[in-house]
View: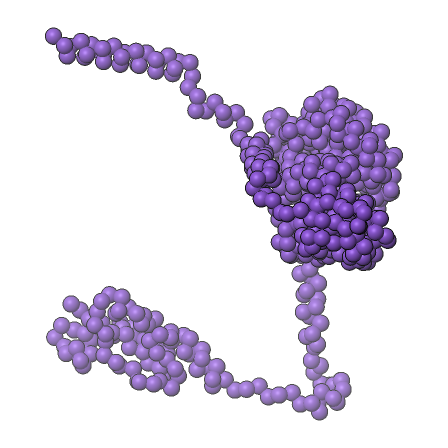
Length: 594
């Protein structure tokens, strides 16, 4: 077996591969030098060969070893022997500008700033170009949906609408409107009037998505509505509400004049932002009749997405002006479409729960609010989940239950739910003084959240909780002491409150009106009552509701239900084969008997 070694010279950083001859002695390493090559320190170990003799110095001065390539060692060696640059003389720097005959050194500090500005401009141009390409792709998806009659392509474009709107600027919109509205010049001029013409810079490439014969073909109403919707969103995000209202009114007139099923999904988004503009202008009552008319039209055309969006917009409109009776009538007279997406379902369930809570239907309100949280997005829509949690906590307190402490500890909810946490502590302990203190301290916040009316009702629950705790602590207590502990005005008020608590089943006690005390009854076995049965019924109903909603939310690919089903010919062949097989089995049975 031929052996070979790799020898490195630390002085020049070169390596040789030495192969001994057959007649030579291996220890003397006589052989042919094949030339310089990169040393491979683990080569002998990888091939299972014996380790070569140590031909290198034990501790080379340059730090070169088998584990370090010669090139790196040369770099380190060169770095060590590199002379240091002399430090600048402070006297020369303080002397001022050089003489005319001297060479003036340029200030290099300004060059990185200029390079950063140029790189920023280039990155902004690249981002604008990417946004334009995305808009072009979305328009293609919409056109493909119209030609193939598949609404899922429109859903792809609308699903990418939020990230696209965050990157909009006047340059992108100006180029997009100029590029798409080639044949319709009047519409192009109308839309460009809302934008400032960007300054032309060198190197700008014109955006021309429609060239040749496509430029003469008019734009589809769906694509035109999508591009105008982008402009409405941009104006709304920049707080130009008057201009956004003008542009949105024109868009609504165009949508109302069309009767195209492919336009339904885009129209639903347009309805939402149209109502949003009027809400910013505090003119929601002005758009209510228009929304009712569009809801009637969407119901007649079986437009599920438009119907769901318009129902939510009308409920929001009514609740904004505290018109709970009209909102409840709208919910009772209409049917929310089952095909609506989860976002619209979450909004509808929240509005319904808010209506039920005002109308004292707390159990139904808690059910709808819990379903709204389940339908809401898991990682986004933090503001919506905060609003639902605030209302749900108040509803649970009104039901006489204490919310779970874990929901107050969630990072996204901890800060916003702090007043409600203090409120829960006051209700749990039955401390009426602490309850009044929290109500006085955070009253404005509760009014902003729209829960102040419901929180005022909690005063009776605080008193009920205090009466229950007193009943558990004392077997016999006077009405005067109860009035003092609950901070009531007189013992007569305490007598009325205790009597109502006994009637509602809050406590098991009796009142001695002559001597003026309350006698608590002995605690009975809770498993002998219907409370365990009701608790199990509530939990089982909750699980069944989750199962039913999960089944309804399942989605399948279109026209894929009949892939595994056999055709009529295959079924006849299978039946014929089964019949022949049965005949053969019968003949075999007959042959088996004499």
